[in-house]
Amino acid sequence: MTDPSSLSALFAPPASGAAPKSLVVLLHGYGSNAEDLMGLVPYWRDGLPDTGFLAPNAPEPCPGVPGGRQWWGFADRSPEARGRGIRQAATVLNGFLDGVLAQEGLGDERLALVGFSQGTMMALHVGTRRPRTLAGIVGFSGALVDPDSLAAEARSKPPVLLIHGDADTMVPPTALPEATAALTGLGFEVATHISPGLGHSIDEAGLRLGAQFLQNALA
Image 1 (cartoon, rainbow, N blue to C red):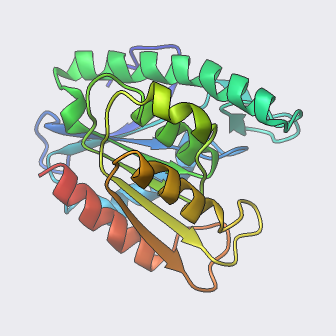
Image 2: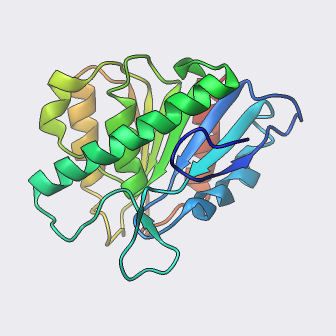
Image 3: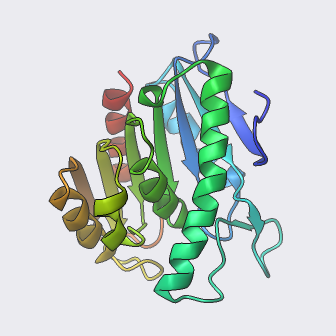
């Protein structure tokens, strides 16, 4: 696949060998890169034989992390700075998604977003504000940024799966119920799972639940 936007990306074609009938876009976390979440593909590919998996690199290099990328910087951790950062990154990601869908001749209903940490923040922000409803959003170890603006800005309500470890020291586990309350309060369908003893990572339960969710969403 040729990347249709300014974001470089890795692509795993459908296991069927045919053209993609659906797409899963994998959004990595702060300081990581596209290669990270491509590690999920072997666990999910056989159950989604007609799905292509695409992992873009975030638009900015991450300071102090060789080879790492960021969707926006954390030098200023104020809510205002975080809101500005995610909106700038959202413009870039939306352009990327629009280009990929146009290239493959697919609609938003055949696209699912999967994020980890800062990638989950991106998935929840972008996926709820696109004018056409996505197939679904899976968020690992993330949070909902700027929830107060969502009521006015939400344009579609895809189903959401949120998964978090209760031993996460990077993004507090309380981010999951907070995001869930904000989303369900606006009428989103949200499924959740807390993994006991899990830190800032993805475990076997998360892999299994993610696979089931994506198979249902892209059926």
